Image: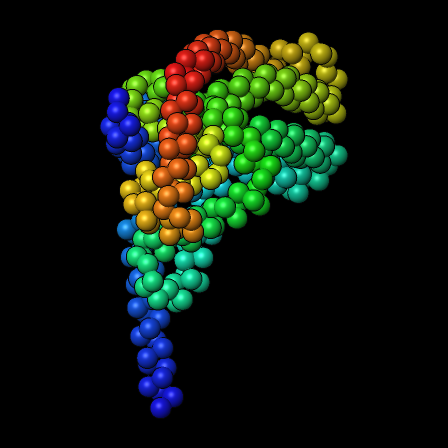
Length: 192
Length: 178
């Protein structure tokens, strides 16, 4: 290559469209995830308002010790979830740069955070169930003698049991899927 | 009398605004490339572009046509870039690290060779010492030797010498990265 053709080639490369191009499929995926994150955030606000507001209203209408404990417990649980959700979502809203590597980094970060959220979700569910079942037991025991068997065989306990089984199944499936995605993204990152 | 003066001042200001906007619109991509060669991140590049635009706005009323508008603009951009580098000396010194951060890597899905080559060239330019970097970026933007000399405030013969050295170094870096 003569020096002048070399310079021309460099100039051509230099003057090419300076906006880095991100593969359309990757960009679409990240945008889809961003939309899903926004919907999830709205859903979380909705659940907080409905359940937190509902418990607070119950405590206001019937200001017994049990209802106050229920409302306080609900808000403590919500505070825990929101603290985790805000911290876990930090740095996952948008890529740092409009480049392929930045989009892959963001996808990897989101994938890892989703896994963390799933583990947190599982633990949180256990704590939440412990609180709810204890509260139901206390609530019912104030209205007459109740055995642990009564509580465990009640409609709400059966419902909780079914939800637990469904949630455990979903968590296993979700973890498997996220781990596969993580592996794929890591391979992609190594290829870069 | 005062009214005539204020109408004239408003007219001048409007003319200045139009010139400013035209210059930025015509040279936006070139300024963006120039800024990219002196910065590591998009945020830094945008900050530098903002500084250049401010300096241009402040400097434009003093421009008396002693050189072309393009040369004038590049001189301002170059001066701002050097000040920016001096202010962010710590960040500027990690050139090799920046090379890894910038997108000098192949596209994973669509293999966009052009983007890859451009990123590779930009990363190589970022590794050049400043005196060669400023010369080669202006040359790549299509400025003549005399324009480069005017922008940098050096003799034309110096431009030739710097360019030869810059090209050799750039060639070596690109070879090393293959």
